[in-house]
Length: 279
Image 1 (cartoon, rainbow, N blue to C red):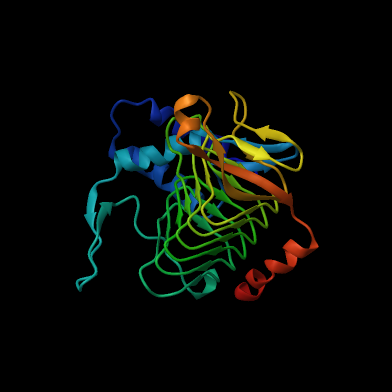
Image 2: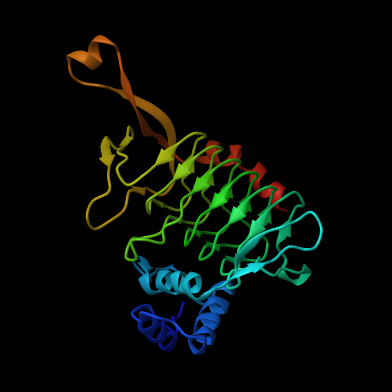
């Protein structure tokens, strides 16, 4: 995906400007419109992986700086007050996004592709990118700048954390055909590779070690790359015993995600229901 370099240079300039003026607002509005339509992204796939765009986060923060508080209430029982730069995302039947009634919201500046299903109540925040035929289930959150691929199921009560600051930090990235189980939490720029499955209750952060029983290794983040779940990995919640006399005596353990297998034909059969739900 091409990046609007002219828009980037303007955003970089405004970000270093101590005080914004009304004359700057059209630049930020153009940026937000491009973000909303998916023409720019906080991160995008490239030939050998992914590339992050810190300037996009700067543009989002500028939207908050220049915005003024506005009453978006509908005159009835629904009331909300937010910056005028961040209204609800405008959707219509031609958007081909299925939003089931019941309290869901998508913030302006989030791209939601045709074929996405949103089950109530769920929330998609500014800067997020959600690919086609993905399902965002009830009580799920897609945080700021999170990148969610195609045919992903974000199950009920799953939390995909937002990353706006620090500016250079990678957002959470979830590639195509991933299944995120209920009550999962994915934070601090964790990277979930194509086809992976996270069982219910898995929590991943930058400091979380993931033990791989199949490949007999431990996956960790380092200074140059986020915590990465390999393609097709099936991750379940586990535990590991605490060392030391105090922990051993009391049989204490720490939560630890464990890769117990890699996706196979049997696993694929068990997740075919997701395709039927999206049909």
